[in-house]
Amino acid sequence: MHPLRTLILAAAGNDAIRRLVATAPVSRDVVRRFVAGERTADAVRVTREIAASGRWVTLDHLGEDVADEAQADQNVRAYTELLDALHAEGLTARAEVSVKLTAVGQKLDERLALDNASRVCAAAEQCGTTVTLDMEDHTTTESTLRVLRELRRTWPSTGAVLQSYLRRTLADCEALAGSRVRLVKGAYAEPEPVAFDGREVDLNYVRCVNALLSGDGYPMFATHDPRLVRIVAERARWYDRRPGTYEYQMLFGVRQDEQRRLAREGETVRVYVPYGSQWYGYLMRRLAERPANTTFFARALVSHS
Ligand SMILES: Cc1cc2nc3c(=O)[nH]c(=O)nc-3n(C[C@H](O)[C@H](O)[C@H](O)COP(=O)(O)OP(=O)(O)OC[C@H]3O[C@@H](n4cnc5c(N)ncnc54)[C@H](O)[C@@H]3O)c2cc1C
Image (cartoon, rainbow, N blue to C red; front, side):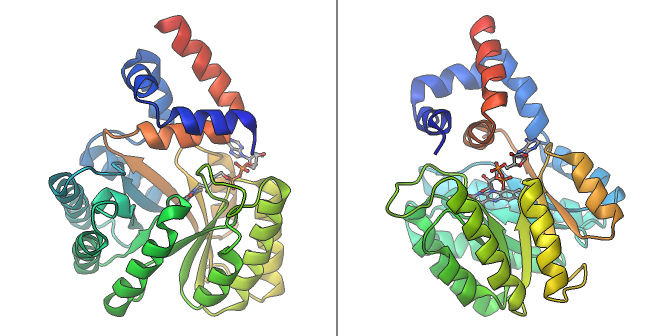
């Protein structure tokens, strides 16, 4: 892993740094690039704009790692309020939601997370859409897949996320290839025994692309990597997959021209749109992915503080 990436992800857990970054005025500008806004109305507005451009959306209400049941409940309510607002605007055909289980209580009690995620899935179904369970660090993988299996008994279209940096993931892709699966490289700092590094992550991504495309599920390829986007397109043709039987996903604020290009070519492109006030952890992971952004951000932070 790039040393700067390791450093940023470690800093993300440091309270003093968290306070400095969260209160620095410059943070607001950087946040605006990657986060739709703090309120439900901001999320709906951005969804409307993206839908109007022929792309799809998955919305993430920011707020991972809750410390108590009340916070977990608040996050569930934020999702149900969002789903109602999207439904009222006729946007649920274009938008689903992404849920982090730690935002609904996974670290407190897996059963609580399952019950809370079920409330979001039920609300999504009533509004005519669905849920994808984001994947967090490797200590949560087994629990997240257990909760996923339970949710799919009632809501079979619930999406999974698998991370190509984990050594276990090819086997998970093979097991889940008949269902809705988002494939990502992975965004957390993981130890060597469980995770690949560097080129191996990309090679494993390609192995997983093949495993998912050869199944009869609905793969969602989430990457900004131009080389991987080209490989997905080539493999999709090889497996005789028509556009609409799989999709590309990219983050809000990242490679928008590429998102539009793919959409113009008739591909399904879904934009991951985070919103809410708890943007710190999300922002740190985005900065860790792009050391160039971090240098710019760190300079601005020091000169403003
Ligand atoms: C829709 C979506 C959902 C995600 N969900 C999860 C999740 O649930 N769990 C999880 O762990 N991770 C998730 N991620 C994050 C993911 O794991 C990666 O950390 C992130 O996507 C960066 O990896 P990458 O594949 O884009 O390629 P990288 O290895 O970061 O970049 C490869 C190349 O892509 C191009 N590129 C990348 N970023 C930019 C940029 N900002 N501007 C211009 N070019 C760029 C550059 O050419 C770069 O060299 C998600 C990502 C997306 C897009």
